[in-house]
Image 1 (cartoon, rainbow, N blue to C red):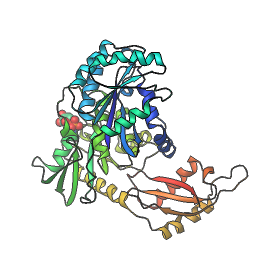
Image 2 (spheres, rainbow, N blue to C red):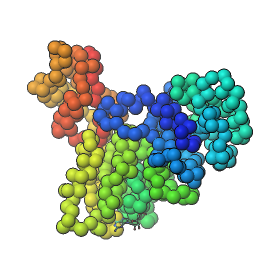
Image 3 (tube, protein in one colour):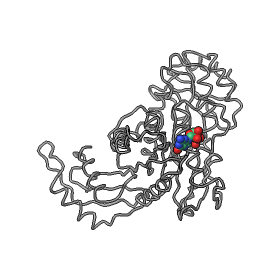
Image 4 (tube, rainbow, N blue to C red):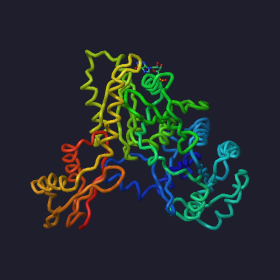
Length: 435
Ligand code: GDP
């Protein structure tokens, strides 16, 4: 997918516009996971073209006293990582010095940059907006992000200027694609080096869909796989990497491009909100997930057992807790092979096909014993179920009144499915439909 970043000062209306873009599609994912969170990443689609959107402002807390430097870093990173940039300004405020700074950076960019003048909701403001030609970014799009005026033309233009991406390479290259992701300093590079050695056992290089994401094919310990090396993309490290935004933004592309995400966390720091965000990104993209708790050599084993540690992580990743968690040390080369094996297993789980007759034999008696609760005196009956012929695990259950089936029951079904089939590490979708 193309990645579109929305940049601009705080309070120009980035989040409102972002929410408008992702609304419909995100609502679907929400009802599946049952979790709501602050959103700053989502998928959108216009005229049949899908793209990912990042609201860069969403990552900056206490945005009233934001430093100019942070905006600058935010923009530089967007320039590095995104395929197109929407620069939003506010007609009420006019051009501010900060806007000028941003425009200066964006004028040098060769990627598509779209100037969006927001809060243009009457004719006087259309006249006011003219001053934004002074930013030297050429034509702008005037929108009213609140009520949506002008956004259609803007999106028509956006999907026109987004670069054409080469077709996915899955078919010709069915090997697992692993992305090693995680916070800076979690030990991603160390793990990759320990796993594949300095010589890196390269078989071939396959250029990914962009100049940044490079799949490299490896053959190690009897496994063949492609590695998407985010640690290696630490180019132009002008920006300090301590902000959550940077590591997440850097992870987005790798995650989207992978089959299984190997999420590396630093045992000495625990599973924090940044880790949670990256986990959630992977889950939302329906990728397989393995968690490696690295630097386990540094943990005092008397005070903290791996079981306790594991339980704490599982608390943090609810409700999708059926994920391998492996304690490793890149330094002492401990259990790294186990980590790799887990990733291969998750890849296999994700590809698995469940035979329809067996599936019905298994699920229908369970459903009969524990049917969905009746609603308004009406009984909900599920008569038939099957796995969909999709690339990732999705299941459909046909019912007389599918709209009456609520999330708790869906979770019950998912748990039963997971008890009986090995979908460890794999997010699954369950749908109820009218038959
Ligand atoms: P990255 O930013 O995620 O790629 O992290 P690096 O691989 O660069 O590692 C960050 C720091 O943690 C470096 O100083 C490593 O030497 C150290 N480190 C990585 N793995 C381990 C480990 O298993 N044990 C210990 N004690 N240190 C580690």
